[in-house]
Image 1 (cartoon, rainbow over the protein chains, first blue to last red):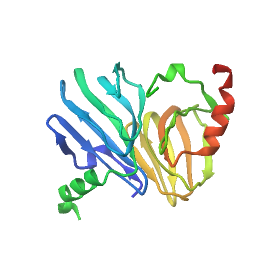
Image 2: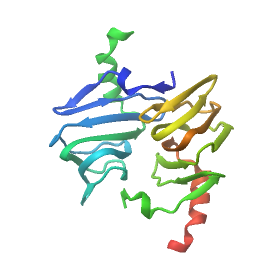
Image 3: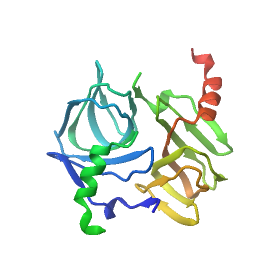
Image 4: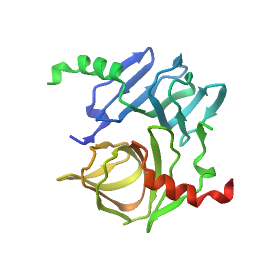
Length: 118
Length: 118
């Protein structure tokens, strides 16, 4: 099914205060990420390239050695294997992240999370 | 530079009434697409997988043999080589599309479009 309604997708709490919905295909994984105020995705890196847009709220985003406060509508691209960190500031933040290739670790956890649906 | 401010990126009119800004990396291309009311991306296909989110407005989206009216916040994934078409309905629509692999045709046109900046 190529169309996804956020409200109909199960949410996976990957980190305390961070819930994601992650439809994915062959090369692309979308991650609709809701972050509570102050929630933090700690500094980490992975071989998958990551991009995205801040949909609502404000987010302190570190990519490599640069840190910025992003406003809604900001785009970003995180090269493979580049350390990055995100914190929701001044309230809840919602981000659409995209990964390529697909993050198999998320896919596996997501599939384990939703077997009741199949 | 991994951070992108929409307002600072040049817009490329790929189709009449459809303007895009397309930062891209190694595997991912983001396309921030603004569509005027009634603007149409005609039925087409490409080997690149495509996904995205409707940011604002309403969009009639056809993927393969399925057509839906998408509301803001709707996600979609278009498998490689699958015919698709989009029309902005009831006003302007803004979409964040993502492609993997990078669409070299867009990249070439975009780079030709912005040499005055470098």
